[in-house]
Amino acid sequence: MTIDALDLYERLRVDNPADYREWIAAHVPADAHIQTWGAIHDLLKTDALYALANPNNHPQADFDRVVEFLVAAIDSQRIPAYMGISWLGIYVTMADRYGWVIEHPALDPDELGRRALTCLPSTRSEAFELAARLRVEEPRSADKLGVDQDAWLAMRSVKLELEWVAPRIKDPQLAVTVKEWLELICRLNVVTD
Image 1 (cartoon, rainbow, N blue to C red):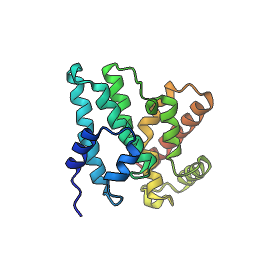
Image 2: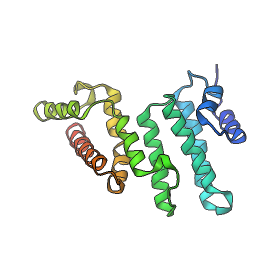
Image 3: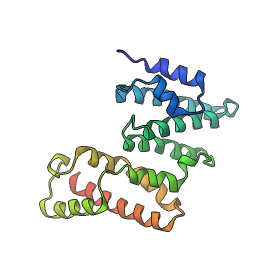
Image 4: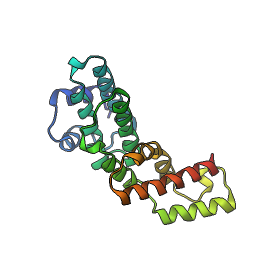
């Protein structure tokens, strides 16, 4: 079955759902390929970007629509969490660039930081063990690390989002945890890149 991302995008804009999870469950087939999700996201992202060029376009509504869509896709496990977090990172940097005050609760630095940390598939102790192995073995590719490829992608994918939230986090314990993960991810990147 062919899924037309443009049709889904247009329907989403017309429906303007109150509950994006329900809308996704009703309209996006469970076997939708990640490219379909990426295409819908790109169309929604374009709306948000073009709205910035003309404030009369109500950019906050377009901005909120894409954030709600991504949060629902992550929460319903229809896209990998690390990918959704990476896509959400586009909107925090866009808001920064255009001087917007971020009003969406999903993009609050503490909330985004927690989301980024929970999408990491390994514990810090496992990651520290991996780092210790890297110091000894110095493999040059993720497949030689003895770590799941998705775990590795997740750690690398959320790095920029963690860097953005780190100086903005209000919860002191969360700030320490984010800083530790950032240091670890940077260490792992140096060894494997």
